[in-house]
Length: 199
Ligand SMILES: Nc1nc2c(ncn2[C@@H]2O[C@H](COP(=O)(O)OP(=O)(O)OP(=O)(O)O)[C@@H](O)[C@H]2O)c(=O)[nH]1
Image (cartoon, rainbow, N blue to C red; front, side):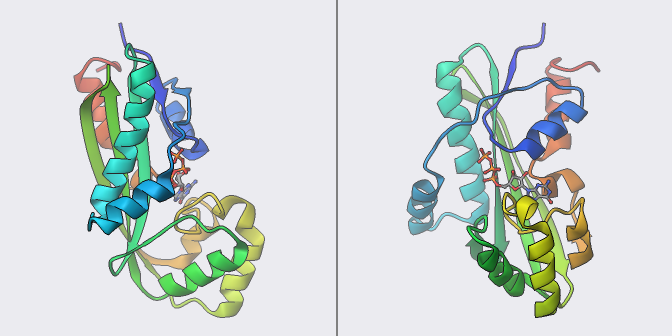
């Protein structure tokens, strides 16, 4: 009998990916102070990959302590450009500034997932995608952000690849789901191996 699956994430995109794969996660966002944790880890010299993994783990662990009988999935996505980690934009102008920084360059998206059960980690994976942007004019960036602010404000890269964001890119390496925010294929493979989904 499959265990209940809890998604410790407020990300509608992550929930939609899991449901599209036939899973029925209960969504219970784990409220952690990501900014404080990120600052502490970066002060210790944590890599962007370790940062994403640690944040995903903290979300999963917090919820697993309260729901020991379930599989709890925590996730986190980090954008890295030349060693600098970017966060989700607070304002449209912050999004414009971030896209100007990413323009014409290759950045990495690191999407971490950690599964806990009964307060113990059972599985973890960090997926990586590399995305190269065209040289974007200020006029294009301004229009793109104005048109898409309501959706890109929730995205660490200030774009949604499955919508107009694809027009920003000259090259994408890595899987689509990792860009959306979850290493879905390795996760489903592990759930299948465990007998949590049909094989
Ligand atoms: N639809 C879509 N979402 C994206 C894309 N790129 C990044 N995201 C979303 O950007 C968000 C990354 O921020 P996170 O801090 O990892 O997650 P969150 O949305 O704040 O949710 P929590 O897991 O509760 O922290 C996630 O919701 C991703 O799904 C994209 O191209 N398309």
